[in-house]
Image (cartoon, one colour):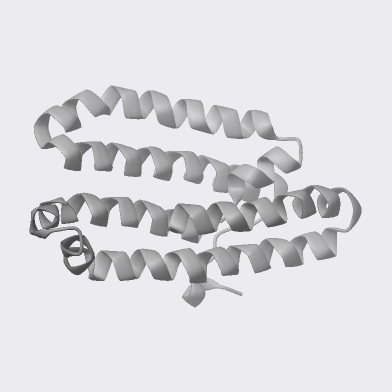
Length: 163
């Protein structure tokens, strides 16, 4: 659900990023802040609810599914991190910096491929969820650091830290 909502939001604002980045920096800043807040409040809230009520949600599919709650919690933490770091990937694509996104994904994937065999062998499905979480954290962190330091664009939205 969070991935669907995140995708819907970035699909709607992506073209606006491109248009405003080149033509209206003030409006560009507003749409960045608006989309980051929207993503955080909608997908972040769903992620937190999923974390808190993972056993109850999984029990809807049958008692045997509750065993997967740690996997669901780890994947929900990954979605929560996504919610806090905003639409960096699509923003890079829309402003002609897709090579930065590609490089972030390549670095994150190489690291994930290196650690995956060990974590999956040791922890099975939980290990794979951890690999996906690490991949997401590395890719998003590279993206937000690049945007912040090189382009002075802040996508991170955490309510207590927001300006």
